[in-house]
Amino acid sequence: MSKQGRINKITISEVLKMKQAGEKISMLTAYDYSTAAIMDEAGVDILLIGDSLGMVVLGYDSTLPVTMEDMLHHTKPVSRAAKRAMVIADMPFMSYQVSVQEALRNAGRFMKEAGAHGVKLEGGEEVAETVRKITSAGIPLMGHLGLTPQSVHQLGGYKVQGKDDKTARKLMEDARALEEAGAFSLVLECVPAKLAGEISRALTIPTIGIGAGVECDGQVLVVNDMLGTFEKFTPKFVKKYAELSKDIQAAVGRYIDDVKGGTFPGKEHSF
Image 1: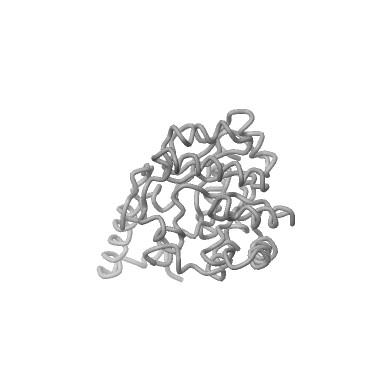
Image 2: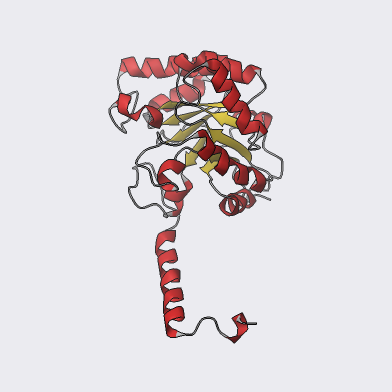
């Protein structure tokens, strides 16, 4: 049971009701069974198996090397852990760009093989046909606009998007196109707060912000950033709710001392 006392299984209809009621939506990334189970028990609304696992789990410098097999592998345990939360899986780079048919096939694999409740992909009007095909097949889809990490080289780096009138208009048009194509929600990443608020009010589907201000209908963070276990860099939009890397290092240090000092295992740990 969540801290808010909500015990309903989170579905698309629940997410839409939350927007209509003005209730903020909570989303966090998850990549393994144990962590996902803890977050599900805590009451998070949506668990996202983000292709961010490329950096925080697999050690790449970007999300681009992440494969379908990587994503399916990590989605399966999260799906098994989630009793209440909706499970959404990122479609990795080149899993949906080649053709609409291949995109549909890969989206279906997340549902059929990995137990996801829906998928997320990046892009605006240029992926509307793909979004329409996937949602028409009964697969819930979350869009992603603004800073889209899979297009980082085209965007010229990890920069705020929509800062001028032209790009702001394009983001609004893309958001409307995704809604019209059937997306049930939309991530806005690194978008000016004022623009994100305007987009949120213009849509009937909820927006989930990450570096996009408080007027979005919900928020998402990478769990490793939020818990302080990934220290390579910390984006401006991250709020650290814990510093677990320090706690883990301290615990490992005590374990090493006990092993080398011969105090572990003790009688109580031995047969």
